[in-house]
Image 1 (cartoon, rainbow, N blue to C red):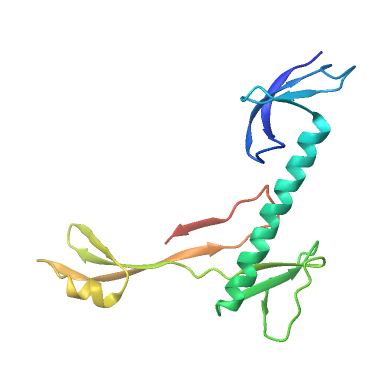
Image 2: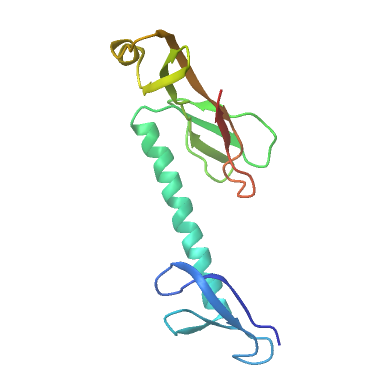
Length: 165
């Protein structure tokens, strides 16, 4: 008999939370999953709830990408399962979520900082803002651009790595 506590999706609320997985609750090696509210559900119902939540999250992501396209933002696509590159999604292309993955193209963040003999001061969205906020001893303005390293966003084991250079 092996009981353990691990995150599970509550079948009624679709909220992921820590739950007690109780072995043999419904018979030999048939788990009952007890949530903090005291309710116990069979493992199958909890797994179905997790799949439903995954579909909702994926649908929301699809909507966000398509809405970005409608808003005029650049969208990119890549054939699933391939080692290919992300390519621009142009007007006239058709959506095919079965064979392709899509993402809104991210634009690197840019900030401007005034540079002084003893370091940096202030952080501004535009060069004009930085120039308008001159302080005593200002040497110049430095432009920082975020370095965007892309990963396949459908691969949940990897995370996007970005840093300011």
